[in-house]
Length: 228
Image (spheres, rainbow, N blue to C red):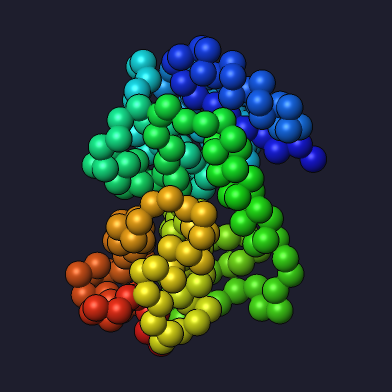
């Protein structure tokens, strides 16, 4: 089945170029040119991935990303014309999974999309055990959902990947570099701050007191681990 992609950018020539290139690879592409149109399409359709520009009319990319995260964990790649690191980290804070800085090479865009799709497909392999639970926290590997005391926690794709890896290997300390390479892939151009941002967001969602966590702990100078 063809992968369905939503491309959001107010520069129509950019959208046209991306759409043409992705369709050449057999993908099904929808396009939006402002933030509200993007929200409407994401609400009414199921996408495998969204390419989302930061600078948009009506609602900017960060607002769109934040809104989509209220109901979906679809992978989101932010497109930004700025090289400022704060823009990139802010995108991750709002729930984005990756970012690409303009001007970009369309081959890079396609490589990132395919890498995310490959990692998503690998999650579909059968597991002997489908659910893991500990001390009120549980994850369902089939539905890729997390729960605290049977109440669902809205996790992004990368947050779930991190929690799954740490929870399935309790008490194993992973360095930030190991987490970056395992969850984001060796070809990911970002740095270890990406891991810190996602761990902080994950703690805010699953911990009663994020500053004094009971699940995901920090091994100072080394990395992170799930305490069991």
